Length: 407
Image (cartoon, rainbow, N blue to C red; front, side):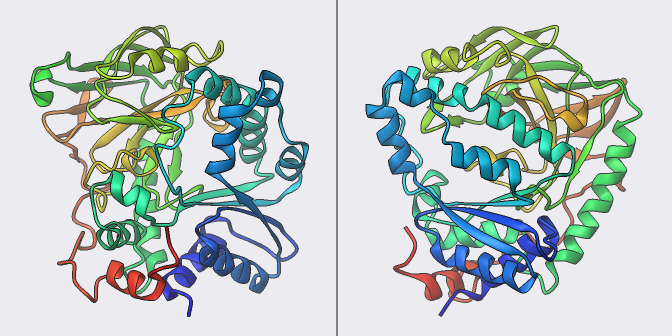
């Protein structure tokens, strides 16, 4: 019997996130461990009158490529992947890594080379999405590997993931519509501003490292409202920086393709990283920054607005959406924001503002300690964040119905 929460998730993905229509070509890409989620989405796409197809993704096979591939093979782009990206109307990506650190000890140069080779695919994906020629959504199906990174049991982790998507509510779409309205108020406000300033005192991170004082020029840039569109769960607003100056110390760990880096500190000048350091894996950080000409440039500035998410999971897909954080992405920018930087890299780095941090917009403080001061902006007093976890929690139901089939 398939988990009914997966069916509920599939309905939200197909109808709310991807807005699937009759005769759409729907490409479903899924990791090998989430076959039941694939079945649920495939069935819902059929019910919507679309033409779904499934394409498997495997971290194990990618690791084999990185370990044994020649330079020619690492640079090769599969023509079938390029074709489906060029022609599909909808791309739904279901992620469930079996081992989040599997590429961690592979030669970083190989990983960077393979990532850089995908620059054209990334640019095509962003262009088609910006032109509204392809609808895209990425979600993560709870699994043991991600739960271990978050230092939780699978039951606890599944409970929090599904609550972050408001799937514990009778009508999740109603809550996403409410969040969308609050975020739109924030986007409308920010679109009239020229400069944002993010500050976090060094004392907020124990005084071990320099704090954050970063100024971002967003004049004449568009702000994008993310409320369950291209990511699910969601909860952020973002734009494409025109310019970035100052220092940011990321007080969240950053993981890139299995390699964890802590204490990352970046100095920006005229939108480009000119100094970089990390307390762990600094060599890997520098290799990523030197991936290509665009990898040191800032492609995105975002503000997290999902207050259901409260804990660091070492997973930027969730961490960047935590209410009371901001993130900056190095590399490829989103054309719809006005930032056209191209790179094989798009890497979100997250900074916590909830302990003494502030956001200023043209000199006005709009957020303090992770809370917006305007009551019309996203707030932390939405639906109850977490119940006591027990046999009838979302995670408990999820495990009872799928135990032994998830890994």
